[in-house]
Every structure is written in structure tokens, then in C-alpha cells.
Image 1 (cartoon, rainbow, N blue to C red):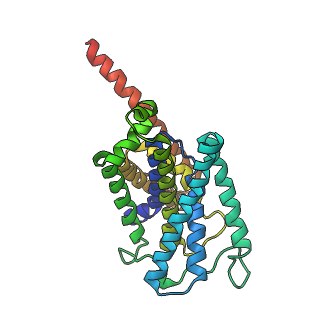
Image 2: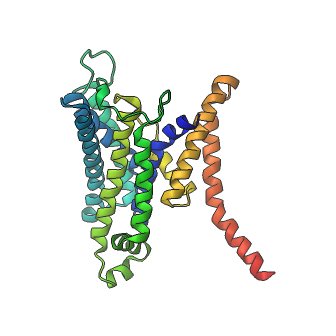
Image 3: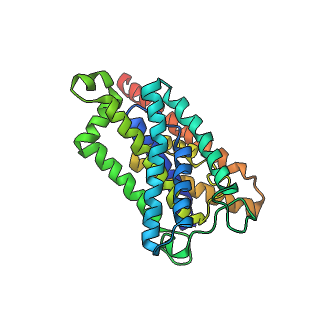
Length: 294
């Protein structure tokens, strides 16, 4: 059950990281869903239409996913920087375009060779991500997600470029006065956010589903935002929150099968977690005021 919870939480963590990178730079990236799908689409195109040895094919598919996710976020960055479109609007609308492209692909140029179902051919077994624990679906992509979260935490806290990114988000005018190129930093944050989500899409394809199909993502990008909030907008907190969300999903699925509980119960619990996370800062402030007045 723990292994399956980690499998369910892995794509949420990639999307949470995507949101966090942009948020720290002062950008509201609601486009992780589209970037995730773009990465999965590119990875599927490489993995099912190219030949090569297993590890090389997997590496090429992952690289394609990263580049596609970054490119998809780059479109939003261009709209925001050059056309003055709101970041929320640009990113969320691109989600629907990405979903449409996936649908066109699995019904058209990437559809399986038998033309029976709206899905791609299966990824060659040799190109799948290795399973870490035999008898489970626990794959190497989960380790990639955790390492990525730790790397982001280190980048933000211990590097000069991380400081520049935080400064651009916390006080853009002060950052510009200090000589930081805020537009360039935010463009970098956009691309990095897209790359993280695109990597998540490629990992989900190569580690879990093995095929691309309609409704490939049941809303991982949007749930990733919730995971980031529950994790108190911290990369390592998001990793813990993703595991919790994965456990809730698995536990509710188990209750649905054995006790007949509605599938919506998971959404209720997840919504409660988000509301609790949003309430924590207010509770802390009230506690401090109470202590100060005592």
C-alpha cells in the first residue's frame, strides 16, 4: 500500500515542483497540467516511433519530455512578457490546448498500429523505467521526483541564482535596483517549471502507464497546486504532502472496493487537507497574538 501511495504521489510531486519554481519567482503557474501532457506526448512520440537500445530510448524519451514541457511553458512566458497576458490566464488556457493535442495524437498520427483504440503503441519493455521493489509498481521515477525536490530546496537556499529567483518573486523592484534582471529570471523560472512538469509526464508514461491515451492526466497539474499549498510552499514539504495525497487516493480506492464508499470521498478528504493547510498560517498568527497579549 505504501509503494502504491508513492506511485500515486509521484506525478503530483512533479507538478507541485513546477508550481513552486514559478511561485518563488512571483509567477502563478496554473499550467502544470498542460506542461505535464506536453512532456508525456513528446516522450510517447520518441518511445513508440524511434528505435534504439532500451536505456538510450528511455533517456531520449525523458529528454524529449523535459524539452517539450519547457517549450510549452515558454509559450506562456512569451505571452506574459511580450503580450502582457496574465500568467494565470496564459498558463491555464494552454492546458486545454495540450489536452486537445494529446487527443489529436492518439486518434491520429500516434494511434496504435491496429487503429483499434485511441491510444499509442506500448512503450518497449526495455525502455520502461526499472522497478525498485519487485511485486509492486514502485519505479525509479519516484526517486527522480524526490531528488528533484531536494535539488530545488538546495538551489533556493544555497545558491546565488536561487537567491536571485527568490528576490525577483519577493520584491521585483528592489531586485531590479540591486541589479537583478527580473524578466530574465522569471523567464528562466517559467522554463524550469515547464521542464519539471514535462519530466513528470515522461516519467508517468515510462514508469506507470506505458501508453499515452485520452485523459492521460486525471488532473495531476491542478492537484499538484494543492500539494504545494498543503506542503506550505516548500519543496520538501510538497514531497511529504504528495505522499499523503497518494495515500489518501489509495486508501479511498480500497474503501470504494471493499465498503462501497463513493469515489468522491478522496476529493472531499483532499479538499479538507487544502483548507487545513490554508488555515494554519491564520491559526499561528492568532496564537502569537494571544501569547503577546497574555
